[in-house]
Image 1 (cartoon, one colour):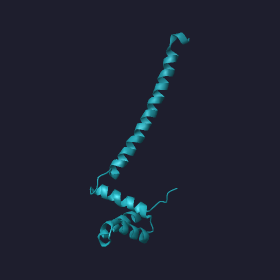
Image 2 (image 1 turned 90 degrees about the vertical axis):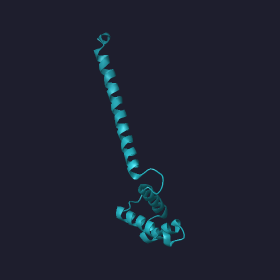
Image 3 (image 1 turned 135 degrees about the vertical axis):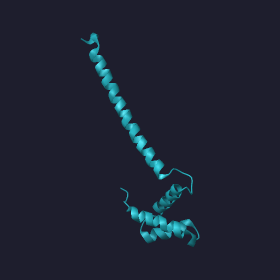
Image 4 (image 1 turned 180 degrees about the vertical axis):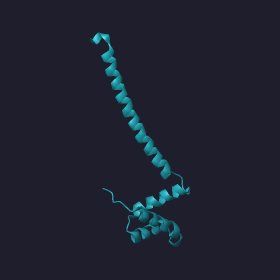
Length: 103
């Protein structure tokens, strides 16, 4: 099970990387230093920084809002498909009950 990171720690770590990466020779080194300092995984921090750049419009990709909307729409689509399947089964059942040949 993944470790739950406090959103405040996550936001602070991302902010530190974005504000201080010019002080390091590469973004990867800034991420490694901040990850050690904040006690989070370097790979997790790298993904968070990447997503923050996408959300800010500095990089191409799917924003957090778009990702949340897609997840919501997929869940709604699944629920609606289940509703349609139930309604089809009910219609088939009731059509059979009303058929005079079945009496």
